[in-house]
Length: 381
Image (cartoon, rainbow, N blue to C red; front, side, top):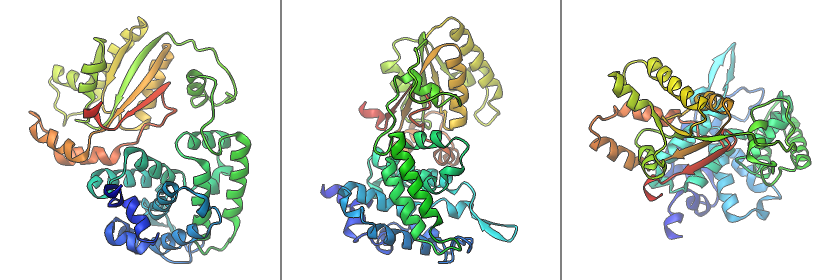
């Protein structure tokens, strides 16, 4: 417990849930200072001023004292970093300050900060991801009603974070601003709460009939979540995911069972193509080999970094289209270990390239495949 208290969650409590004190030890929060906001929505000041108000409003909520100590710490931390994507996204457009996609960027920024700074943050993989997803979805309660598929967005968010915590974060966010439309966002949050409870996902993800129905719901627009589909899948495909040197090859050696492996790195070496060159030819050959196995209904392993959701979903669509059950395996090695492995690697990855990959990573979400497994400590598995 003593070791954990030295991390950011323990410091959040020791600091008395005060943003300024948290920022003294975690200066990453100072990036929020001086970042401008649209006065129509934020007359209170820059992003740091807004964040400080949000953290204060969180403590005033009547539900605050009913939360567990762990939920209090993680919710406050999410409030402290909820707009951490704004420094990278904020721009002056048509005479107005705007921060498009700051929640999506904020998730990645927080994850990268906590990952690289693991010795200071001292968060478990699951704690880090819970906070990252609160950052990612903190705007949903205010704007869910404008989404094309309201149900889908709530079901998706519920897969990764309790909607009740998201609701409290959004309420504090709404109260922590001075806007021209006071109360409107908070009213939207109340509708979000009512709707989340009505869908039965307020405290936990929806209980789909089976993994196949769950996969199909998140990949088709006209399927009701309560359906119970017959699972027609015939064979298995494993898709690896994770930055280079995270342990994918080791996992395959231990768990691959002699199945065929399609490795983009091996194809690159086979063709004599440098990592600095384009990957189009490598991917085309890999897909061609995958199709041959898919046509024969032969299980195999797809070994590549697969860092973005767009890439993973294209592959999942290809594999599932042939009747495969897609098992996504995400592996993660500690940052310092990653750097050590790179130093002893015969062909080192240029450090800027490796760092860019860490920043680019979009964590696989639980709905992306028929099964998604996370292995945050590759060496210990």
